[in-house]
Image (cartoon, rainbow, N blue to C red):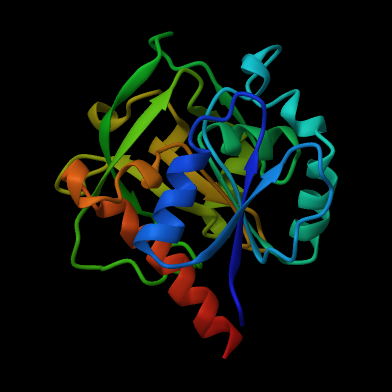
Length: 236
């Protein structure tokens, strides 16, 4: 399998260059930017919806971006089993597009939060978590959001648990999931989820912002490396 990443750029995206830099310079992957008005995915096998403030977060975060022309192609790609990852605002867009269940509400403290947090895999059965080092108790990844409080109804929450669709939970540096380690009020400390088919993923923390030695944090690289290694192994 030949992997090619496409980073989708919406008006207001501000983490697209970070994602392109990490994938191309740190991980030597093929990567292109895809403008929101185009419909051609340029043969990309892996799509990333980056963080930012698409359309200024008017109405709701991700609500307008969901109707960008490229989203029809993203939905078709996802429905065919193609890999899609939404980070922060990208996660919000995927929920608005109903590619992922639930919604991201305002943080419980009603403030924008920008800081390093710790997350841990809820399971190791997905492309994004399969090759994460199990000896690591927690991964230090930054968050930067005002609407990261994951919410859904009770039946969907139970389904997420039963199908191992919760991929990351907020925790402390020792990997302990607790109320104190929950920065935004998310149900079950949820930091990331996937769809039932486990090819569409959303997470609020920014791994692309924790993937360079100069930032003194490379924990985010593990996440991108797991995606690449799992995808290559799947194609063998």
